[in-house]
Image (cartoon, rainbow, N blue to C red; front, side, top):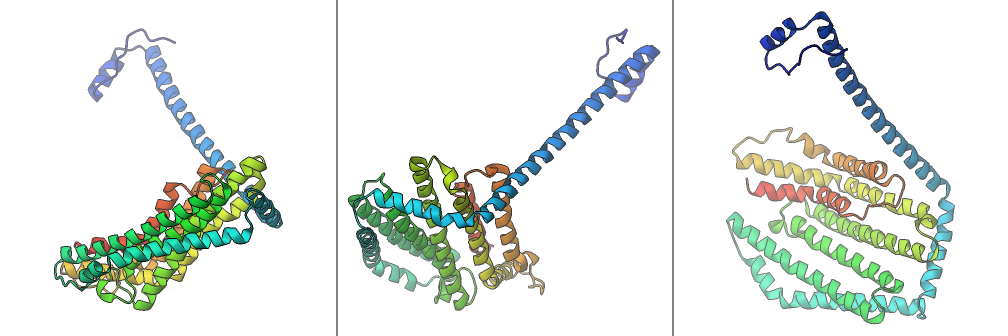
Length: 365
């Protein structure tokens, strides 16, 4: 049915009534059918979109569950995969394993000497800086951030020196170079994490401690977070070395799917364990931050300070595993893990440094 008059969209209720008064019964019936058809079509499309989205999520979950189940059942294949990788590494160089280990140790030793040299060069300036007394916020922050920059220079010296040594013995694109670099870059990451944690937690130096906690918990946070950085970067670099070996010798990633699954999930498990291991110290730091803010704005410190601070370790663990599921279900779809991407790294860094970030913010209140 076609309308006998031309219809424009009405701009008011009065215009609707005036429009209807000009239409015949057939025109009104046709107009109503047209509008109802449009509404029904939009609702049908929305329902189909929702069904498609749910179906996609369900299919991704089924794929992941199948991948996880397969990886659990095939764990006994991991030693064989590692044996293949070891065989490729040995055949890629004429050097014995003992010589390779000595070269790696030499690179680490040179890196440590470079870091100590930088520390020696800046020791007097750093000590004068630490001994400087300041009662202003900006003065205190200048001392802390300058001290941090000196420590970072030492870690950078370690990384550069050890990299130069490794590159001088093995070509940059060789597998042995990458194997040695896994060790040196992991230690570099651990060193960088250590100086950042020392900046926030200042073990044995309560007067320089931004995050208020006990000496024991400050030491525990600093050491455990540094070891976690070593582990995460080491697994990341090892994963891509294994990928390269697979591409060159075994037809791609499929030869190490099971190993890759466990390498991937181990990062999230280790991160969650470190959060739980330090749960008391992390909650204490956030509570102290809340106290600092309350006192700064002239409010009484409430007994129930912050639900968020008390439950932050649990929240952080939930965020870590939510990130894992998001990556696996939405992005990876049981393919090569992308835990090494910057987005995942940033998530880890923000979660682990959140008490320190919160403490820095509270200083400016």
